[in-house]
Every structure is written in C-alpha cells, then in structure tokens.
Length: 260
Image (cartoon, rainbow, N blue to C red):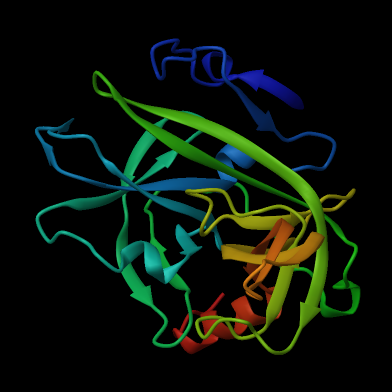
C-alpha cells in the first residue's frame, strides 16, 4: 500500500494515540515505508512491562543493517538515568524494543546502537558523484505529546525540501562538514535521516541541528536633539536544518568499528 494511511489502519488499534486517524507515510512505487525505517527513541522507567512515568522523548534513529544496528545522534544520550531504559518504538506496529550497545563518537554528534528485531528496510547511502546542492529530500520524524494511559501519543511529521549547501568547513565543532537543507530540524527530529526524494531513495544525510541566516528588510537611523544616534533594524530569519553528509556518516561508522 502506498501513500497516506491512518495509524489505526497500520496498527488495527484506534487507542494508540488521541488522534486515531493520524496519518503516516507508507512506502510504495519503490519508496520505503518510513514507519518501518525510522524509530523514535525514549528514556523510560518501566516496571512489569508498564510505564511508571511519562517517557522522555530523545529523538530519532534509523536502520543501517538488517541485524538491528541503528544510527542516531550522540547528544540524545548525553544525559541518561542509569535506573531507566532507552527504548525504540517501531511505528508500523507500535512494538517496543530496548536499545542496547550504545556507542557514541568521541568527537562528532553521532552514535550507533542495537535494537534486536526483524528489519526489512535498509537504504543505501547516496553516492558521492550525485551528491550536490539542489537535490530534493524528505525527512520523517515524530514529536511526542506524552502518555494517554499506557499509550504514547506520537505526532508524525514529514518535511520536504532540498539541499541548499554542501561544504567542507562545518559551522559547529560536532560535525565534520556542511550539509544544509531548506527546512528546519524540528524538535525531536535529531537523528532522523534525510532521504533523496526520487525514484530510488538514498540516505542523503542525518539531521542533528539547525543554522540561522538573516536578511535585513528595514533599517532607519535617527539622531535626537541631544545628538544621540539610534538605529532600528528589522530582519527576516531563515532556519536551515543541519545534517551529517553520507560520506561523513560512513566515516563515523568506520571510526566506531562498525562493519557492514
């Protein structure tokens, strides 16, 4: 099935969230089912298989092999409670899995981990020779609105745009190079992949933050009777999502000892 379907249709359960007809993107015509490909991550306190408090939403992750390895951002794990568990939610059927064997890169905002479950969808990294500004991309993630009973209330969102800049010198220390996309990385989108939006989908990067640029729209200078000078400026602020490039991700995987 391709296109947009309700969460109820995916799971057969209208009680999974307070929006039973919430729509999520399903793959088709060569496109990946993103509900099986990306995973929301949470830190939880559980007893007897039940949540004892509202889980803390960490961010997103995605499959990098069919053995359960996932990639995400290291900053998601920067402040973890030893008494709690990190879990992943498989959105196509709402199963919960523990996240194990977390390994964070020493320098860059990147991490890998293990989620033991059957994996059907893994996408290849985009080849370097086709990786240029102007490529159409999408990013799929969720925001969490807390618990309703024992069910997590998830709000999936899909962002669509293009790569606006690729370069060597990163504006931040925790990234190796530059990839900016035309839409912001929404709250909770850290760790989600950006995917090429064509007939064949590739991993074109992984979101980890945002970068702001501004345009001056208006400026006026005034001098009062005492000779004091005043300036007033109005700017329009543009926010771009920042992503690790495919080649950087592959380098980080190598640094962490990952073997495909």
